Image 1 (tube, rainbow, N blue to C red):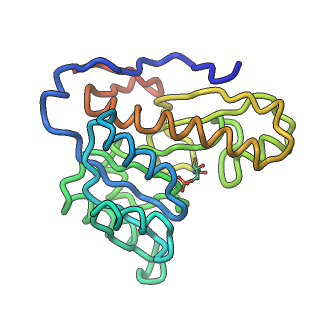
Image 2 (image 1 turned 60 degrees about the vertical axis):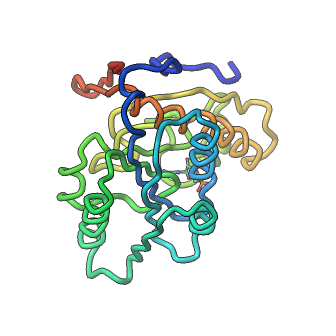
Image 3 (image 1 turned 90 degrees about the vertical axis):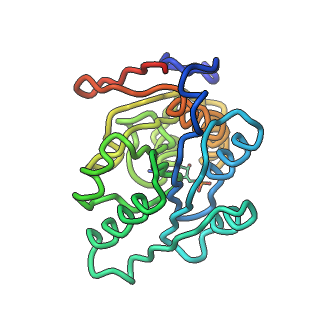
Length: 224
Ligand code: GAR
């Protein structure tokens, strides 16, 4: 079961979009930023055709900010307390995505639900999130602990489009992770995080090499 993939196309060969410029992405983060780092590393290794044009962080002490600075990635901080409402905060995020010419916004441990209608409407199916469980199981915070405490033997990761609801948008990619041998929730989280780091850069890269088409909730990948 280890690493078993629920099959969706995951392009590894070059296709027509790869002849064009790398996809311009923004990463949104609230904390540690290890998924952000995995994307940076994959870009540097030539395995992910993306330019991270901005890091947007909602916490001024987010560790992700240091990772951005080390890699000369512009940082924009959008603290909740600087805005009269969550909608106003999200409107600022939309302005930033517009300003930096972002093609894909990548949520990597961004722990605020996006609520702004303008942002969600303007960037519909251009905002993705990674969640450390097989959705729709265990949405919300501490998904790894939720799964461990529940006694789930298999959990995993989900990469999905972001919509108005929590961890609920159409699913782009899922991968199962066997946590049956894990003795603690932390061990399970570590194993799941390794899968996240492998998968997220590949999914970002897939956006550079093709496009995703929605049929209802079902997501299909079209190369080139
Ligand atoms: C990751 O495990 C990510 O899946 C999770 O937060 C962590 C961020 O770690 N996101 C969610 O739970 C979203 N619902 P990172 O900051 O080291 O990438």
